[in-house]
Length: 89
Image 1 (cartoon, rainbow, N blue to C red):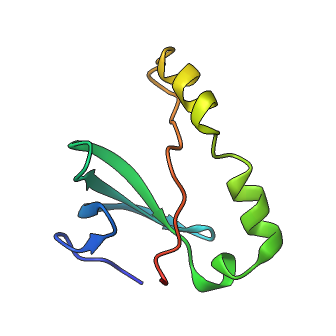
Image 2 (cartoon, rainbow, N blue to C red; image 1 turned 30 degrees about the horizontal axis):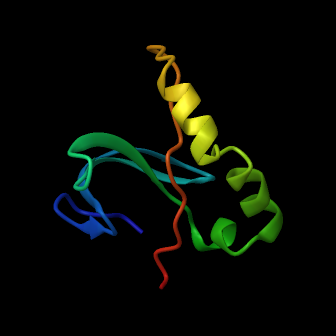
């Protein structure tokens, strides 16, 4: 699934493709709620429907409290995961 610039995925607007691999495609996108650029990963169906892979991926997304704590310590090579969503409805 390749997404064109301008495509909306939930609260995100696709700006450009960054890369792709076995775990999905990554796009530069704009979070329209927070008005900031983010990296948005789109999982392929084979990953999105595999319960074991989803548990592994979701375990890397911090709780709200952990996200608040980590937002206080910024590092130029660390990426923060802010949300997980299912776009299938």
